[in-house]
Length: 107
Image 1: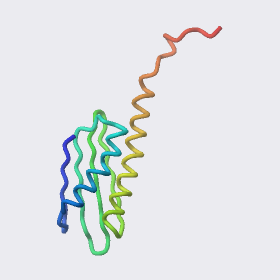
Image 2 (image 1 turned 135 degrees about the horizontal axis):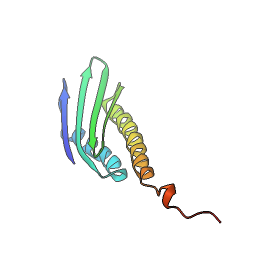
Image 3 (image 1 turned 120 degrees about the horizontal axis):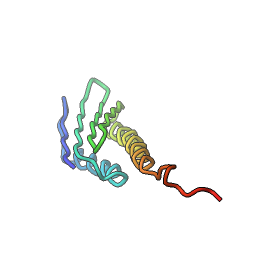
Image 4 (image 1 turned 120 degrees about the vertical axis):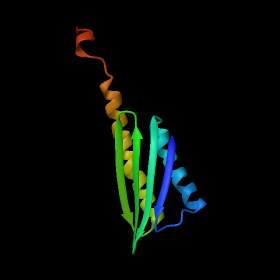
């Protein structure tokens, strides 16, 4: 997984980077076929914005969250991303079910 973190009007501290990596591990536990992750953090007056673009096999997911606290925005972001990744994983797994043509007839 390639992780790119960038900031706008914001200093990316090692603590912030570590917090983000720790939170993204939750997504990686649910779906490990992630190719690229681009994170963009920005500060606009009193709003902290976190955006993520996640590229996985077969789909690209974009999520953004805005909050007064950057750590809370990251938490919201990861929650939204986790829901979307789980939804994508369920769709991929449901698609591989056995077709009706090859199923055994009911007795």
